[in-house]
Image (cartoon, rainbow, N blue to C red; front, side, top):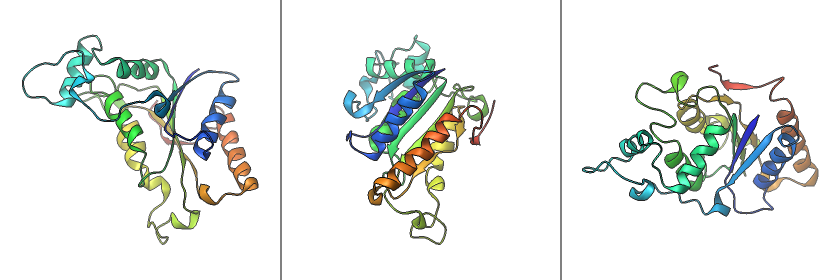
Length: 222
């Protein structure tokens, strides 16, 4: 299996980095694993006109220019094209990031904006179960700073961590046709001691080792 890890954290000593490293270690035993380290790559988040080798002319509509580029044999800028090719080859994609303002960091949101292009990841009438990434799997691995009691309808945040991630799991990944695994969300990472940190990583390792024989699906199309 070809595995892609899209990693969005700048600190190699972070818990997010530890999760990324564990994915590489565990999945790398049996599969080919490629990592897109967005900060190390200097990936640019904003969607810009120069994301395309050529444009259609006239009024600039970014999504329609994406479709135009896709129809011209993927006439995207090299940084976008490189990431698109990684996704096209991958059968399983992990997105590893901290929870930032109840979503993902801007660099990863920008990666979605630029890489999951119209005509590449979705198109008119080709969304959800007909999305262009149908048959691929995706999973979020998220590190959150606050404790578990914050993440429920009576807690400080008035919603679960999974609810906060709905726009990514459903509105991005499932929208493009991915079969989406239940996210792995590490809570209270700012307060974890050594033993607690090790326990969370052990739990993640168990999930990773049993993705095939005992998957936990959030959304399943195929």
